[in-house]
Image (cartoon, rainbow, N blue to C red; front, side):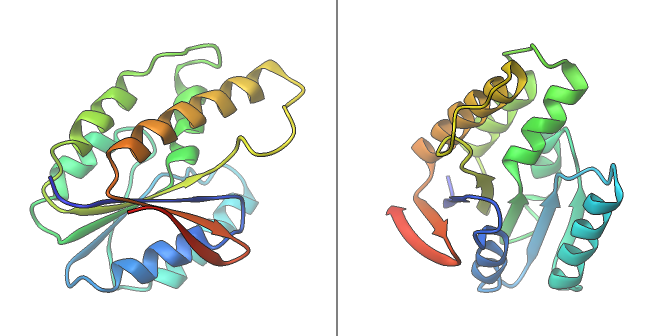
Length: 172
């Protein structure tokens, strides 16, 4: 297994920029984007992220099937950046239904990560540090994200917490 680095933190904490800068140490880079451009704000965010990456990464846009995307590129690159797991989880909830608690896609990604052939940097939001959400869907999403983040952190060689643009190594 190659190195897995988990980069987590709150919204606008600098996670994506940190992950991109870390990936620049590699020669052959891939970026797997999970966002779906469903409104003007998301389209604007995606455009800004693409601009930041320029042409320095092979880019794959995959909102659902991360394991297959990883398998399709892992032998051709030195590093993959996934941005981001929490957005991907939101996509799965929307696709499969808000009440579903078990997702085949999550299991596939976790198993793939345990056998990854290149280094991988995974960006995710830490959503459990704030106020308990006032609705069932938001609590379900928060709990799902927490469980998935824990599973990835457990197998990661390194985990970085981003706070106000500053990185704090919490594992490795």
